[in-house]
Amino acid sequence: MYIGKAHRYKIMNGLMRRMRIIIVHGGAWNIPEEDKESHRNSLKEALAAGWSALKGNGRALDAVEEAVVHMENSGVFHAGSGASLNSEQKVELDAAIMTGDLNLGAVAGVSCIKNPISLARYVMENSKHALIVGTGAQIFAKQQGIPLCDPDELVTARERRRFKEGLENEFGTVGAVALDGNGNMAVATSTSGTYKKMAGRVGDSPLVGCGTYADKERGACSATGHGESFMKTVAAKTACDALEKEPDAQTAAEKTLQMILKRTGGKGGFILLRKDGDYGIAFTTPAMARGVMKEGMEAPEVSV
Amino acid sequence: MYIGKAHRYKIMNGLMRRMRIIIVHGGAWNIPEEDKESHRNSLKEALAAGWSALKGNGRALDAVEEAVVHMENSGVFHAGSGASLNSEQKVELDAAIMTGDLNLGAVAGVSCIKNPISLARYVMENSKHALIVGTGAQIFAKQQGIPLCDPDELVTARERRRFKEGLENEFGTVGAVALDGNGNMAVATSTSGTYKKMAGRVGDSPLVGCGTYADKERGACSATGHGESFMKTVAAKTACDALEKEPDAQTAAEKTLQMILKRTGGKGGFILLRKDGDYGIAFTTPAMARGVMKEGMEAPEVSV
Image (cartoon, rainbow over all chains, first blue to last red; front, side, top):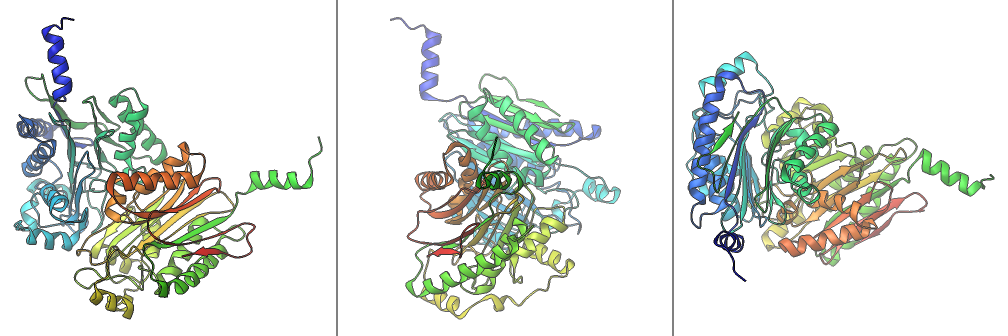
């Protein structure tokens, strides 16, 4: 039997590699008009950084870390530099990273770390633990040779002004999910948590299953939104489980968000990637900063 | 149609109240022979305390808190007084409490709190947050008028000795699940985490879905075991979800533990209560301290 060139390519493609894809988000909330341009630019740059890491034999794990590090460093989102302030006018950062084979690292309540997502990866790769919080996480960072920063370095003029103005309900968490050419998946999420949170409050982002989850048997999900509601419903794991029941990832993401809204009243958004590369992006908030880059696309697509 | 007395009672029972039940565990590990008697006695006392709270219109929430407070105070288990020491020879405690209507409170990495489970309940009832960690949790405790204790008060001579002897793999977490006469469910879990853990390490116990979960649509579960493995698999929520697929709670508990063992190599145990009162107790460790008291039983049944 003759197999045409296109078909042969498809078979090779199917056998030898999965479709490479990376999806990012920069939070789901009522993003102010004056912030939209900077959001779009930073999403594009984060996707370019992540996509570059996916080339050749590049790993999904590196791609999600690269993309999130870029967003943490941008000063645009409420993660890393650009963090929102807690009720004590201090910064406390949370992050988690996970691969499809259930490797997991997370940190919460850290103040002196420029890139919490990279510290989370150190927890995953260089400790026997999965979540380290507070000053313990900073002791671990020092042991790993990660420089501690002055917490004030992470606070932008924009956030000082917003604290005074008393804006609320900003969910500027960042996250990324990716699938690499070898079929491996990964997810990363980083945040400064809700605006004017109490000292020590931890939301869904660094909590496995809540803001962050990956399982090669189903898919990967990074969430953003009202943390306590996403914790109660173990949102990211529930979205990954919905991939088994629903016809596509978009439906799985939308139905899970509707369930969360119905049972808790909480709003937010998901980026959800199925193990075969099908994906869904959904939100119940007025807006969500998000973007995609995948095999066959000439340039990243972003929306705010 | 005539309805006999027994049948009428059953209908009334079915319509007006669910079967009251409380189940407790005191950890799943290789419990030393010399500790078994004290474990049995403490489990009985914890069940009596919880059962007493379930009388009349008593709430499942009060029952699980009472039972866990009793175990925290006993000095027998690795929670509250009796905590194991971390790598710095210090105590860091974690706890979570949750009701079937998804109300949730948790604390992690607290050192100066005699009853972390009660502080978790304060988080649930008196804050807008669900998880508060480290020194932030102690600031919250002070605001709530909860006295802070000297951390050394929580350290027993037994634990000082064990630290020197270098014993490992003790999973002495405590937990309780209950269903009250009005059909409400609750779960509580409290722990000092794994032996010689790094400072700041948080395991599955205080993490929603991992060590602790309740949902009136399915059931309630408290887990104990290798925390990192139970986190990766979001163990307690997965066990509650299995109640929908499996014929009974025992099968759901056993199958979920086997899945965790297969996918992560991690061992531990569950107490799992279905919304209708059917329950399962299972463990993949050599032993598990556990007990039950329910409607129709004359006295609590415990095993170690």
